[in-house]
Image 1 (cartoon, rainbow, N blue to C red):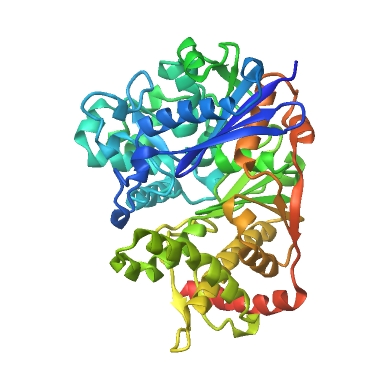
Image 2 (image 1 turned 30 degrees about the horizontal axis):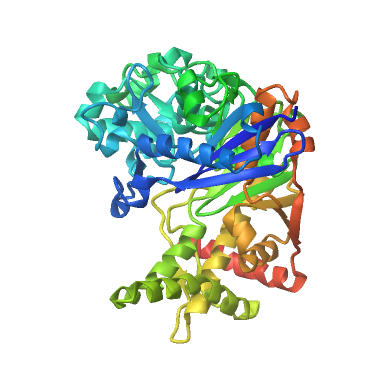
Length: 539
């Protein structure tokens, strides 16, 4: 019988369940569900950079999306599903009790944002990240050296310390913490107890300062020196981590019944969305896979012999096995990309609130970005006299700094909306080049770029601009759901359908639909404008 696997992609706004034929990667059906509380704007305060998500959102959409996707499949598919794996945003941790239960699921904490999952783009912990960086440089072990040398407020230890300082009730109840991608497999396998919870190599290595060189996580003395609020957490965490080809367990009877599947279904150890998306996009050494959406996450894999003793400063970590077991995974990215375009659209659409006709208002809003792209594409590169930086949500790479802000320079009375939009698109492309330059400066060769995600699939103007600025071809993956497809590949390996990730990629990969080639004249002109971007960023 044909075997099927389910890849489940948890993004910033929604969950997508994808049912895949494990023999060839054919996508049978998908279902998407938005997080209900998140869509209402609950528990968030954008003015404070606070973004929290309730675990009930994750639970409710999981059951609904999987059942809907299976309902779209031919008869017999559900009975032959052999594996499930998740990918999620990250670092998105929550504090837990002694059973590994996120505190927001406990009585008395249901409406407390500090008891919920702290979304990747929550930047409330800038102060704590600064303290981690300062102490790391003074300590006898440099715990951030494999994290690019700079710890970010987007990552778990800074977030946990900030919440514990802010909330005495949470501090009194918290026993440990869990990453979103590690909690979901534990949830559906019925794993309770912190010592039984399998932690993924991806999240631990890139965001939690985990490395075998110092026997796992930073030691208790470092953590309590950083903040006495962290006392005791280390003993309730972990030393060992697992790559995502490993099994976390099998479906519990409760979740097998909820999803309409067998208790024999293997649940894989999970990872972050961009890492699994890179596998879904058939990543190989010297290929940069860019997951391009509200932000970007950039992934490379390098053989051990290429890495040797290299430390790449200012990236988001280099971790053995975080993408493909047997190679070093390297992560970078931009804290804002599509979010920057959405911000500009929201600025322009502000007066539309005065329209009484809601349908008319929405129709106009929906046209803003497509028309801006059409008009901006008509402007010659040599007329790109407005220069912007892409740090409206801080900077992830190179050299993480969530205190920096965006800038638009060179405005005059002729600066129209399409010209400003073009400058913002160019800024995101320049931010992309700063990342590729950082890798190149430290001996990591990039031979090709692959784009996945919403912007890659839907924005030709953005992708062509990026190809011109990088002066590299950019291939776009066929799959609309590269993240979920990557998760499905890992599920197939964890379930024993394939013996390695590479074997799963070869069988299940869907190829590429389009390639954007750099226009030589534009690339030469952008090379000069890029220098202005660099200078603007120094001001």
